[in-house]
Structures are given as structure tokens and as C-alpha cells.
Image (cartoon, rainbow, N blue to C red; front, side):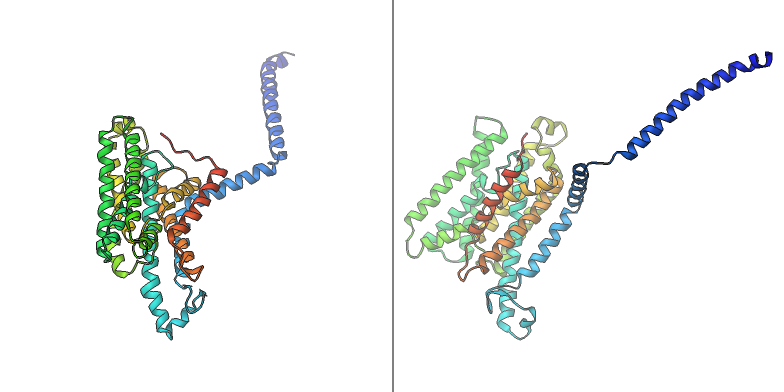
Amino acid sequence: MGKEAKGAPPRIRAQGGGAEGGVRDAWKAESARGSEGAQPSPGTARSAESRARGAWVRRHLSGILAGILLVVFALALFVGRYPKPGFLNPAAMGSDPLARQIVFNSRLPRMLGAVVLGLVLGGAGASLQAVFGNPLVDAGFLGVSQGAAFGAAVALVLGLRAYSLIAVLAFGMAVLALALSLWLAERFRYGGQILRLILAGLAVSAFFSSLLAMMKYVADPLSQLPDIVFWTMGSMVPMGWKRLESSAPIALAALAVLYAMRWRVNLLSLDDTVSHSLGIRPGVERKVVSVAAAAGVGVMTAVCGVVGWVGLVVPQIVRAIDGPDGRSVLPRSMLGGAIFVLVSDTLARSLFSGEVPLGIVTSLFGALSFAILLTVRKVELAR
């Protein structure tokens, strides 16, 4: 009895501890059985799989776009209407000097120009949409495209048929339109800095559009007006090795500036007060981005004419896949723009016996893509 009494308290504590441990063990076992027995619903599994695929695509999107661009370029080089509509057998170039001439002296510089044009339009659209916080902005909203079109129309009306004179006037008017937009934005007394620049760009665009309409009105309807109308529709027909050599350096320099500032685009998309607190000067750097975008678009527009919708639609498609981070959206928009323009130009020169202006094809596919994009997701890019 005495020994049992002495041993009772430890036994009671042990029993108490064992009871608590047993409850915990039973609860853990039941939880384990419940978790083992619970199977994810098919919808949950599909959602997780879809998220995993989306994450993989986002991580490798640049490589995917670059690969698509290379494949499209290689195929488009042999697509055309010689010797018959369709695909030219590369082996035929060995025995057909005309095929070699067409491929290397006509299609190759034209396709390289289309790639540069797409890079510029996609990069300019992505950067301007981000820094101005407006998804409906592209390079044309500063009046650059309209100014270049007016300059080319003036050259044609004056009878200046030399490409160098047309390009100089077109590029000069594009720069003048940009300068007017920046100058008016500094003198407007309504709204903040971004709103003033957008309003100034709209005013300058309308001004040069009216001047372009005046040039069409006074142009000779038989010899000058058709050239003006065709130029304003955009085309890669004028692109050759010499014109590519004269326009590509400026365009590539503008692309280099935009690419170098891609990480600052995120900061410029913030409120100016926040941007100041992070150590940048939003007014100055926003102008640098605008000038670089306008210079690239202006020099390519001087050669190829007005090509629309690329800078508006492509960045939004990229953001729908990749998210709003400007560090990745800007270079991927460049690649997407190059693919868009290259495919459009290939269709424009190969679908029919007569070439369709590039601007018509890009506007058609751009408007359809924009409508589909807005019906399947909510476009949101605001301060």
C-alpha cells in the first residue's frame, strides 16, 4: 500500500500526460486520414496547372518571342510571288540569278526594315503608355506621325521626288511636331504635367492632320495625290539597303535609349511626388523617353509612311500575358512589334497580285486584336 501510494503520483501524471498525448496523436492521425482522403477537385487541379503553365510562359516569353521572330523571318524570306505565288524553294537560288536578286536585294533589306520598324513601334508604344499612365497612347499621340506625313506631302507637292529630300522633310516635321507638343505642354495652364502633354499632343496632331488634308486638296489629282495617299497608308516598298543604312542607326540608337531606361519606366509610371522621393526627375526623364520614342518612330515613318496600331495593341497583349513590369514589357513589346509588322508585311506583299499597303493590314489586324483584347480582359493602366 505504502509503495503504491508513493508510486501513485508519478503514475497519475504519466497517465495524464499519456491521455493528452493520445488525444494529440488521435487528432493528428485523423487529420492525416482526412488530408489523405481529401482529393483536389478537377477545377482546382486545372487551375493550378493553368497557373503553372502561365508562370512558365512568363519566365520564357522573351525566348519564345525571339524564336518566333527567327522562324517567321526565315520562312518569310522565301514567301512571295516569284516564280509563282507561294514558297520559293531555297535550292532554286543556285540556278536562278533572278531569285537570288529578289531574295537578297529586295526581300532581305525590306524584311530587316520591317523588323526595325516593329521594334521601334512596339518599344515606343510600351514606354509611352507606361510613363503617361494611359493604355491608349502610342507614338502618334505627340503628333510625330502626322508631322512626318505632312512633311512628306509637302515634298511631293513641291515636286521633290528624291528620297533623301522626302525623308529629310518628313523627319524634320516629325521633330517639329514633338517640339511643339513639349512647348505647348509647358505653357498650358490646365491639369498636371502628363495631362498637359497629352492635350498638347492631341492639338498638334489635329493641326498637322489639317495641314496634311490641305496638301491633299492642293495636290495634282493625277500625279501627286496618289503618291501622297499611298505614302500615308504606309508601305515597305521604298525600303532598300541604302535607305536601311540611313534610317536604322537612328532607330537603333533610340531603341538603345528606351531599353536602357526600361527599369526607370516603372518609376515614371508612379505619381511624380513618389518618383521625386525615389531620386529621379520625372519631368526630365519623361521627356528623354518621349524624344527617344519620337526620334525612332519619326525616322522610320520618313521611310515607310504611317503605320498604325502596332504601338497601341502589341504592348497591351504583352501586358496581358506578362504583367505590368516595364523591365520585361518593354523589350518583349519590341519583339512582339517586330513579329506583328513582319507578318503583316509578308501578307501585304504575297496575298494578292498587287501589293496591299502595310498600314491597311496593320490597322485591320490591330483593330481586330484590340476588340478581342477588350472583350476578354479589363485593360487597366492608371496612376
